[in-house]
Structures are given as structure tokens and as C-alpha cells.
Image 1 (cartoon, one colour):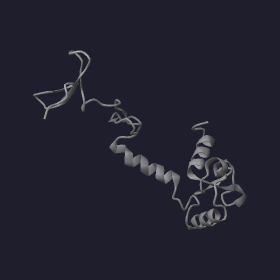
Image 2 (image 1 turned 135 degrees about the vertical axis):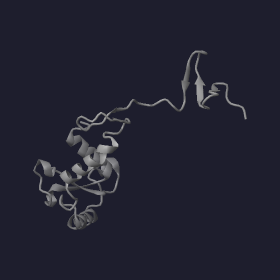
Image 3 (image 1 turned 45 degrees about the vertical axis):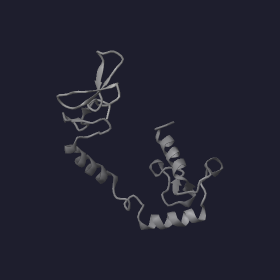
Image 4 (image 1 turned 90 degrees about the vertical axis):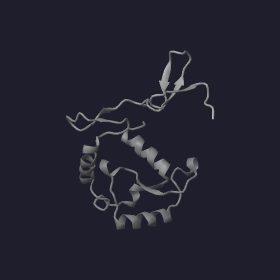
Length: 148
């Protein structure tokens, strides 16, 4: 089996290289990282982590546990069995997304018009609206300041 002319083999380690535009430019295929590692986000931790990761293996579980305790369970936040029954009832009563004219989707999420964190009542049906997931994600991100 012949190899393409642009590929060379390192005889000592068996690694592949791509030969560039000049005979002096050679770069490794498999050994080049995409982004450099960065320090763990835990205070005073010098461990380096891959791009896209926030914490090293030592602190990942610790931070997840702290986050889960702070957030609370779904039932404590109002999304237990009562919330599931209400969601089912509400979506049967109002099956289309409030933005149906734009998105043409069936509602899958019961959204709070005024966020509970901003003073909206959790169980007031006048504070609810049916939305599809994509519209709900867009609205929530816009309100939280991530996109708008």
C-alpha cells in the first residue's frame, strides 16, 4: 500500500507527519493540541486542565456537589410530582407555542412570563405561557443577558 506524497513516516517512533510547502516545514498530525491547557478554576490549584474543562479531576466532583447542594432538588424548587401533573394539564389545554406564527412548533415547556427570581408567582396560571424548547431557551437566554 503506498502512502500519499504529502505524508512522511518517522522511522524511530512510527508517527505520521504532513510535509508542508517547503522541505523545512513539517508538522505532526496526531500530537498537536488544539488549544493550550489552562489552570483549574479552583482557588490556588495549579493543575492544568484541557480546554473546555473548568476543574481538574480532584475538584470536579467537589464543585458539582457544592452546586447541587446550592441548587436544591427539583422537588424543592417546585418541579416535583405536582409540577409534572400541572405541566401535563397545562400543555394539553394550550398545546401550541405562543410564538407559533413564527416557529410552528408544539409547546413542550411551561414558561413563567415573569421569572420567579424576578418576583413572578410560581403557581399563578396567569404567569405561565406554553412554549417550545427552542423559543424558551432563546427567551431565557435573552432575559438572563447571555445573548441580548
